[in-house]
Length: 252
Image (cartoon, rainbow, N blue to C red):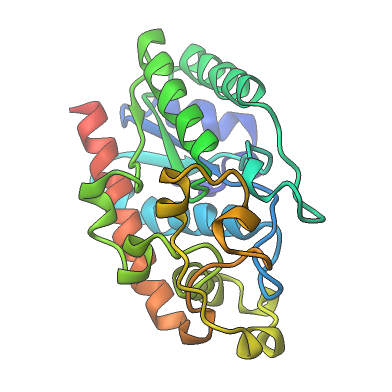
């Protein structure tokens, strides 16, 4: 696509022309949430990360012969673990899946070649929705690219903190927001935060159902004081390449 990479900023004629251009059109859907991310990061942290992953992926997709555009993001998804914190807005799994399926049906009807899900919101309920939706969208006949970073193979490509599971609003996510939207990071708050090595993945496995239960009374896990924008850029590059690989795998 030679027009704007943000899908909704194009006139309808640009989308039409891209679809008939002969290049496979990839629509990237950033999946995030509106939920607490410590006292130093914004509620839309996951949206920022997912959109930024998509932004880095678009030129890579263009270089490989695809047309690509970034859909308006999903800012409301299941966020049960954070719902006790002010500002968190969680929706039901059925609602979230129905929305994704309706988006997919509309894209397929227009001739879009692939729906790519760029996700950075790892609440177990949300990951389950995306896995189920991916399967059902594919059954509709629309190829789906979903690099699931909770799977071991992809998780191992990311940072040590991410792999530890102590990575909600910690060094990993804070670095990503610092790289994309440093103006939204409360640096004064970040520098005062203590390390929190509690692993969310271990807590989930033991039956924790809230951030409080998992050992995160301030809605963060990990080492936010160690975050750097440079680390964030390295992570975006890895995540974008995974998204491109998933598109290639979906389209063959």
